[in-house]
Length: 92
Image (tube, rainbow, N blue to C red; front, side, top):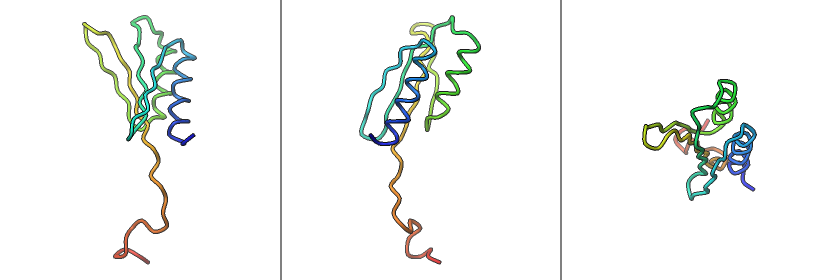
């Protein structure tokens, strides 16, 4: 399993441990994690949630009065390493 998927699964597991129900979706360019956040989430749980999504490449919160709050995170696959990536004009 690629490292990005392991990272996404780890984030999802940490969100589940707080009592949330994350949805993980693998896409061509990233793996996304979304979870509905209840109004009743405690401050301690918020800290744990934010520590979990901080491991992602990007994250955010969508909130409105109609649909509640949805926390999302995105994990991008690591760029492959290939020797000198600076190009021929920047070699030592």
